Image 1 (cartoon, one colour):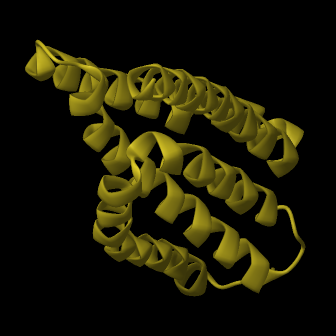
Image 2 (image 1 turned 180 degrees about the vertical axis):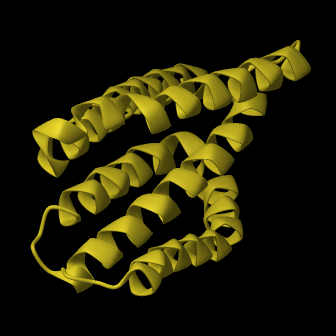
Length: 153
C-alpha cells in the first residue's frame, strides 16, 4: 500500500474495537455464551479473509473485525466456564487462562514461520486455528442443546 512507517503504525488503532467487548459480554450472558461462540469465530474467520483483499480499507476493517471477535471470544469463554463446570471453577478458569496464553503466544509466533510464503499462508494458518475453534464451539452448542432438551422432557 506504499504507506509511510508512521501511517502504517496507525494500524494499531484497530485495538480500539476492544470497547465492544462489554456489549458482547452482555449479549453472551443474555443468549448464552455457547450460542454466541460460533458467530464470533465465524466473524474472526471473515475478518482474517478480509485482510486478503487488495484494498487498505478492507484490510483495516478485517483487522478490526478479527480483533473484536477474538477479544469477545475470550470474554465469552470466561462466561461459559461456570455454565460447564459445577466444581473446581477456579481450576477450570486457571486452565483456560493457561491455554489462552500458551496458545496465544504460539499463535503470535507460528504463523510468522510462513511469512516467506506470503500473507496468504499466514491467513490460512490463522483460519485453520479459527476452524478448529469453530468446530469445538459447534460441538459444545450441540451438546448443551441436547442436554437442555433432555432436561425439558
